Image 1 (cartoon, rainbow over the protein chains, first blue to last red):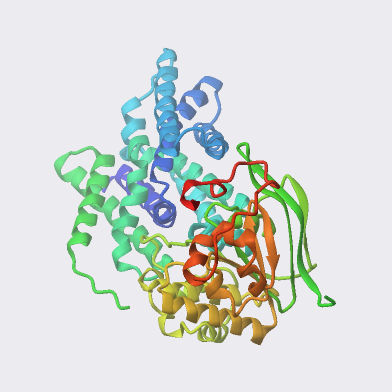
Image 2: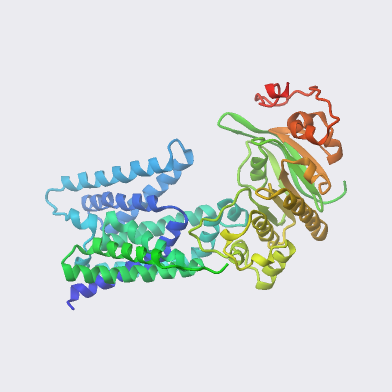
Length: 263
Length: 254
């Protein structure tokens, strides 16, 4: 195997490992569209990063976080339904990003690579980001795990029981923003959410505890990455979408296996 | 009363989008006391509980809690996402770190130990209310705040649950503040009734409340079924509230 394939595999596995537990929370908290909106806005982050000459990952995380906070504030006012707000933000930020990149005539930007991922172009530097950032995310998430579960079940009950709800929510949104910045390279802006929610959804039927579901989702994500890369090599298909197709195939396979849960 | 006061609400008022949800509401709960908050839907009962629990800040008035007091809360309408795999045991310990023995004991106390290992989505309405109660008890509360504890429970189960709540109060000696909309079901367990329709219409011992004209005007339509001899006199007006109240003078009152 060539070096670039190893890097692709390592990068993909790193992202899939992270996507398991975070994606499970996105499924439990019904935040798929929220994740999608943050992912879309990362193109605006890239545009700003190039314009201002700052690190792209940092710019993406900053834009995602800003958007997340803005959404929370606007949601509180409830002038518009949440999904309408999310739709406005998702597509406006994506379009703004594309427009901003079009202005940069001197810089050549691979738009398709950003939208659908360019896993075969993962560099060693990217791997540091993925695995370093990933370990940091998992460490923070393990500390947030219990309170996050509590507010996922019932926010007000958790607050009465002493959970600092606002801090935990903000922490979780920060984690999603960082994951978006990390996963962008592997599956692309338009497909990040799929890698977060499809393995988690596939794992649900086989899990009896939240932890098992998260772990199983990571495992299925890794399997999807390996299968997708293999298919991409075998039939010369685009790698990012192949990974998502593999995840969807695993989901269908899982859905067709009969399971009898005790209780 | 010389009994220690756990909770005092002093003339709390709250407006929301131009509506007076609560106006000048006061009430007390003492140790070992069971106080029932009664009123029609949309009367501000849940909002009052939220103010008491510190979830919502009132526009004016104070909530005084005994310092260091632990509150056990049972919210209204809790449904756990079907995508979240969670056993009853796990659900109950989300709020506290309790030992296995403590968890079993709390569920035994509420009569729900047989569902301990079941997915929390697979228990009946009555069982789930008992599980919620057990979760509140695990905090070893000085005050229990129960928002419509018998909802989604059949009538026989409602009596059993109210009996259980009365028994918990006797055994543990904690204060209980509970929301209900059926006075006759809670009559025998409750010590004090506060009748709320944005403002406190009347309050007192359950026997006196069930014949109180303010109570009868507010919830009298149910009351008539239970008290066949009651004559429908309308001598009470909601002059205290600055909002028009749907019930007063509405056509189904004749």
